[in-house]
Image (cartoon, rainbow, N blue to C red; front, side, top):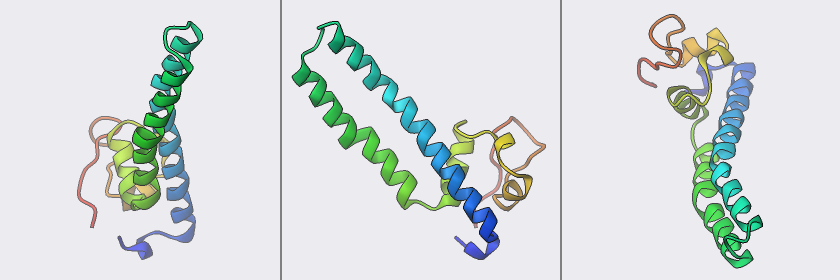
Length: 117
């Protein structure tokens, strides 16, 4: 990725968008764990089973998301988030959309065009 394509302010905005996407995906993943807590409160699973589910979540989906969003390129992470409907194009400045090579006018709200250089 060519960092010089983005100004310091735009790089800061990309980092904010990455954080937003990460939080949204993590929150969505946590919903299943929330269901497990409900089952535990209703005595449908034991505390040990719940603990195992928490452990599996931590070592699985939570770790995968952490790895994706903290070790990847912000530019690609934001494109991924737009493509998957995690972040809407309307939440991103036109200048960043242009530099990401994402059309503001064409197609569906989150259609991504072009390739990352």
